[in-house]
Length: 311
Image (cartoon, helix red, strand yellow):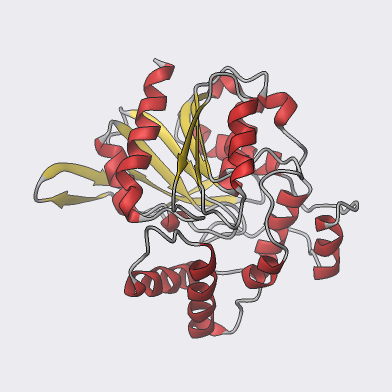
């Protein structure tokens, strides 16, 4: 059910309009939950989150900062995440292991389908084209959007992501169990989340413990689906190598990657930047596989500067 827009105010910054959580039907089976920040007449910026992550992993403070930088910011829950619709089809752990090994597995949906969800959300909002920023799996979706419909992507920010080529951007197999083994109630989910973020987070930019607990609890309350994460992960591990198609891209692109990323090795970011003509590559020492608040201004400047190239 649509909520009325509300407003937030900072004592030292201009007022930024923030919508309530809204819902957009993007296909007969899928409805996406989304939220907006800023002036609808500003430049649209679509934020795409990664594996299993709800839109709230795009921190509201970062969204507000981006809105103050001149964007109409849209964050949303992907299918199979948060309050958006669940996907269809069942993936078993043996199937996922087969997919990781490069053996054929029929994925319930693809990254192309998730890119189509994103475009359908923009259609729902009456937006013809937008700047797009994606994190991890969201970066893969954002790349796919730029490849399939470059006229609709004003600029691309690919953050801690990769091209889909198996020899770059690798993830240690031991992390899979940590990602999928968090179904023992709210407290169990929070405990497991703290453990995994302790392994893959940014060593140079630690997150406050209480904030980690709050975010994990918020994520659980929004809805956590192990089956949904397995469907998303299957879409990731069965993706094609986008490298050859990225080489034909003419969309202004910035690639941001942490040198301490254990989830997606920095080789994935380097390969993405090498594939896209004239891409800017920003490597951040001490950054892992998260969006620490200490780097919000850095992310905002990078996305704003890249968007300005589109003008």
